[in-house]
Image (cartoon, rainbow, N blue to C red; front, side, top):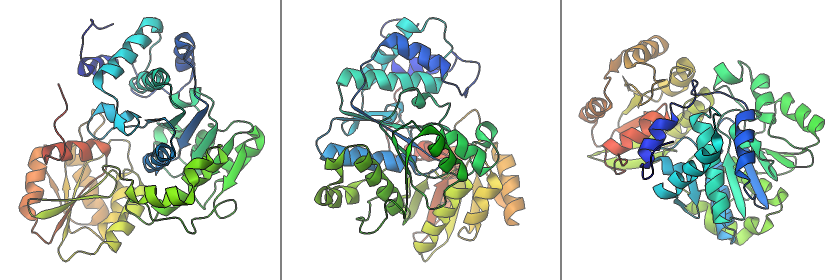
Length: 412
C-alpha cells in the first residue's frame, strides 16, 4: 500500500503493477474483494454493455435521471484526459481525494488478490457511490460483459447497445461469439433492452435461457418522436430510444417524462464523440471511433457534414485494432492521412500504422511519431476551409485535446 497522502497519480501508477496482465477477464477476484468491502447497494443499478454507443448511452441516461430528481452515479471507461472522468456523482467527476480514499479502503481488505487496473477502478467507483448514498448507479461495461468487472453486481436493468467486431483477441472473432459474451450481463426477470435492429441469435437465445425480459427495437420500442439528442450523428436517436426503453422498463418512469426528455436530450454532450472545435483557423473534429462499425458511422457523419476544403486525418490506434476495417470506410472522406503513435503501451507504432494505411488506401501516409509534431504537421497542411479529423483511439483524442489547450494538463 502506498504511504498516506500519496496523490492519485501515484496510486494510478502503482495499480498498473498489481496484475501481470493489463486485461484479465474474470469475476472471482472482484467478487472476493467486493464481499470484503460489504458495501450497501442502491435500489437501481443500470448496466450498459455493447460495442459502440455505451458512453453516449450512459451520458443520456444519467442526464435524464438527474433531471428527474434522482441522485445518480455514473461509471465509464476509458477517460479522455483525467481519470476522474470515469467516476461521476451528480454532473461532475469526483475529486482526487474521494478516489484515493476509495483506493485506500480497497487496499485495506484486498490482501493478495491481484486486481487489474480496471478491476481496482471499478471497485473504487462502487465505494464512492456507496458512500454517497445514491439512488441509481449507471455502469458502463468495460469489455464484453459476462466476465467484465462491472458484472459482479446484479443489475435491475440492462442495455446492450449493439454488437460488432472489437476486442476480438479477448471476446472472439465473430459476431455471435462476441454477442454471447455481451449477453452474459442478463439476469432472470431483469429487463434487457437491445438497441440495434440487427439482433444476433446469441442475444435471443441467452435471454430465453436466462429468463431475462428482452426488449427489441422496432418491436417493443421505436425511435419515433424522440427529440434529437445534443450528441452528433443520426444514430444517436437510436441510442436515445434504447435509453428511454431501459429507464421505463427498469422502473424509473419519471426520467422518461415527455417534457423532461424534450428539455434534456438536446443538451447532452460528451467530449470526443463527433466533437467540433475551431482552433488556429482550421476546424478540428474529434472522434474516438476505434473499430470498423464506429468508423462506418463516423464516415456517415463526415459525409453529411459538408465542407469546402479538404479533410486531414490524424490517427493513432492500439495494436489489437482492425486498421484496415477502420481506414476503409473513412478513406473516401479523407484527403491526407497522418499516422502518429497513441499514448499507450499497446499503441501500434506510427510507421507500421502508416504502412497499413498506405496499403489499404493505395495512397501515401505521413509518419509523425510524436503527437505534438503530428499536430503541427496537420496545422501546417490545413487552411481555414479544411477539417482536421483526430480519431482512432481514446489515447490520441485526449492527449490531442490537451496539446491544443482544450483541457488543462493532468496533475502530476
